[in-house]
Image (tube, rainbow, N blue to C red; front, side, top):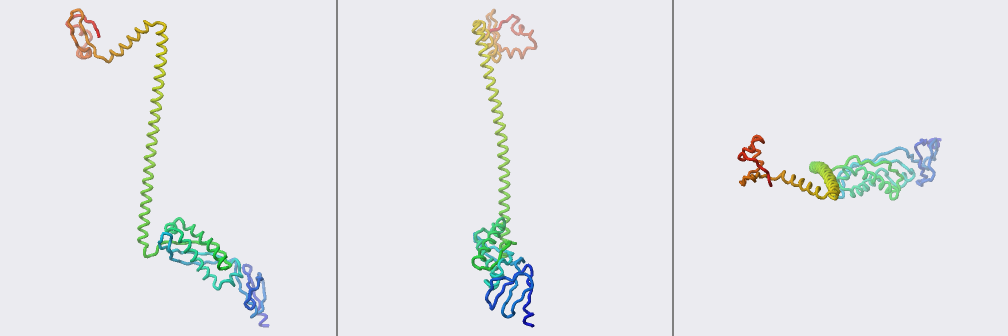
Length: 294
């Protein structure tokens, strides 16, 4: 009776029972509920297949650029196949830790140190999860499903932390100088573009002005040509007089007394500057009437 009564056991809803009969694995799993086994004949290992477990470890390894980095990683997993979990590996957590370290070394060895520490940390964790799951399924046959891999921290060893901080500060200074130079370049380019547009606009305005002036001169020439064809002598005299007016406006003038035969050469501009009124002009010429000639 005692032997019979000791054979009862309970399997919870989130659990499954793996049965070993004289050490041999039975294919059928024990479902949730009250169960009985013949003690000393069947051994039942209860496995929780919904609980999420964690394995954490810290390892020191080499990166692609041959730098030492300390990585603190956390692996979350659950049991997917209870029979393999119980039978195939003796210590599942230890085996998972070894597989994790091996996978992590492979992945970290394909990244530079800066990538593992900063922007590529999440990518490295994803690669570790994929490779680790493949290793557990194909090599270990562990019946474990890796649900999440997190790299909590990654950095240089404590012995070289100060030197690493100096390098990081130097890189930050380099990035700042690059950003300042880029901002200055953008300012110069923007100002040069504005000046170029202004020069182009001025050139377009000058072009339009010259073209319109040329068109006006052409129209005026055609109008004069029509008048010349109608009255050649009158038009030619008028053009001559107009041209002489334009020439004499910017040329020095000379007053000549033709009647007396005495030539008095005097620039008219100087005479007009020295005289106070137009009535003083005859007295300045000796009291005689004068005529102008070129």
